[in-house]
Length: 388
Image (tube, rainbow, N blue to C red; front, side, top):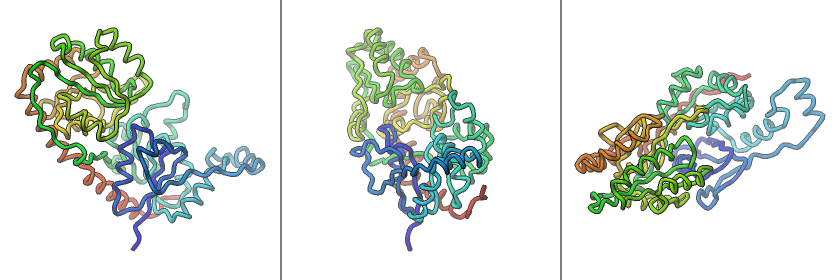
């Protein structure tokens, strides 16, 4: 008997920071998936054998005028995207569609309303925020949440945001991204006797990640331990300003910016470090964190976490048990957490072991992919959604 087929729709497959999506689609066992995307990126980093580029519709200006101005159809219909996407899904004998990211779901919503098979949209963090350039975005998002038979969220905090937007709680499934534990083995560490503490943060270099707070907290630690160093792995629009901040704090020689790293490179970096720091915060435009993948990976290797009570972080880090949490936007409190760890080697050791054990219990990729496939089976069992 052939496996049911899920179309995984991701507009860009895949940006460097989207490793969690790659782990999901390559981890499926009970379902076959193919990718639909508009743009292919990082093919060497994320090879995948079955990719369909979203086809471009042929232009028929008379038909387009009729659909747009007479029939008042949405862009996805009058531009022809609906027809070519429907044909693709039919040709591939697709049983359901998983749309990655809420804003992509909003764009595809007129299609999802008409397609006679079930669909699910998963939310990951930034895709739930308002959009100043699209004043009708939130009303469209609310309508989509009311229509869909199932919605996925990466964390309980995102689940709460979806409920605030009017989503029926019974529709929401927590879709945590798992970690392949064999790639991030536990590493038994010892306290650096010469004070050469090594801190790590790995993420996109954007405001939500609070990297400016990391630098300020590290400046305090460096004043106590001149041999301490900080590695900030990743890339993004704030790279140059962060380098300038490090220089202004006289930390240029102690802070390394190696860019995006491969999984083996990240695992080696974590093994060389003593603390993972991640002071995420809610930005002015309501950009919110789910559960940072890099944080889970670091915990798997035994790195204690110093982070903030933001988004889904407290769902993975228990204060005083697997890490230390402080309020958002509080560099002094962050520095106090670092001070506490470096002055209490026994607690540092206990947090290390507890972090690794907690991740293995709650974020193993095999378990999380199996849960995802269970959601797919539930969705297929619901049958055809109500048609528009």
